[in-house]
Image (cartoon, rainbow, N blue to C red; front, side, top):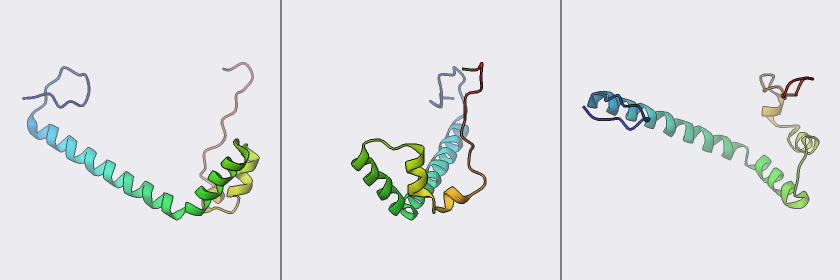
Length: 91
């Protein structure tokens, strides 16, 4: 048996487990990279608008982004994460 190199665990795994973990991780990473590239390509005009606004203003606030991205499909989805706000007494 040999260490998988997955973490600092002292456990040694059989070679077939190491290969399966590596193959699965590789497949997941490849799929996520493809999905990310597709999303970036599909939203290129929005990325360019945000980057140009950053070049012009050097800083963007929420209202700036809302104006730039108001007509994007992502902004119209109901499953967006809510903005986290600090409640009184919590840090």
